[in-house]
Image (cartoon, rainbow, N blue to C red; front, top):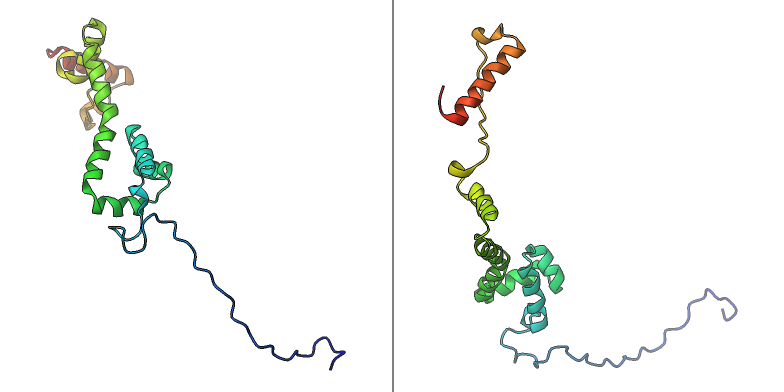
Length: 165
């Protein structure tokens, strides 16, 4: 059997390997952190990255990706700290508020003011009125030519624009 390489070797007594305890990456000893393990969003640099993305009005997926967290981590954190959700919503509103402030500051320019009114007070200041009407074709209009139908359409548009017949 000594020359046969496939022969089973006698079992050696096993020796237990020494295991070394891994050091925790947490700055708190086990059981001393108020929430158990250190949460990623407890780290100021992670929160700041999330806030930066929110100020750019990034969606949740993009904000989490930029901060290096999962959406589950985000939801767990806001369940525990709802004030963070309010803070993030405020950051997401910043671009809109800056845009509105810029518009209002520039209303002294008549051309800019007119564009603003065209969009906000359409009934009074819109340049064009878009009227979409569906007309059921009856026997009365079936026999009309394309030119005659176009003429009727022009008259209807003129009445809609001017409000008279």
